[in-house]
Image (cartoon, rainbow, N blue to C red; front, side, top):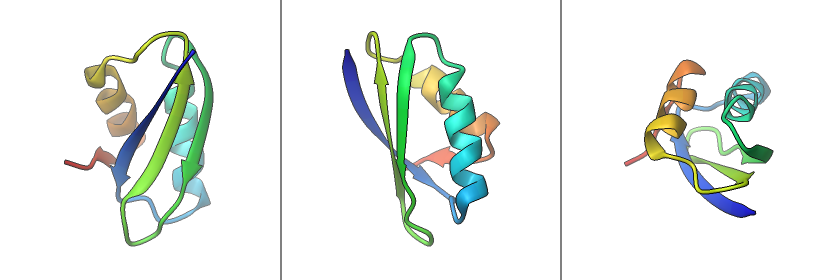
Length: 71
């Protein structure tokens, strides 16, 4: 198992958390998603998966939910 964290901008509420959680769980091999919501700041999304996730796939999932990875 691999655990990786990603910084996500634009999240402000529990709906944001649910949207990111749903999209991340669609990625192949994802077992768990934990989100530290920091409204007005960069939130932390921690994902546990079978293998490292491709950054392009993570970025696409976050984008599908309506948010962006922080630089």
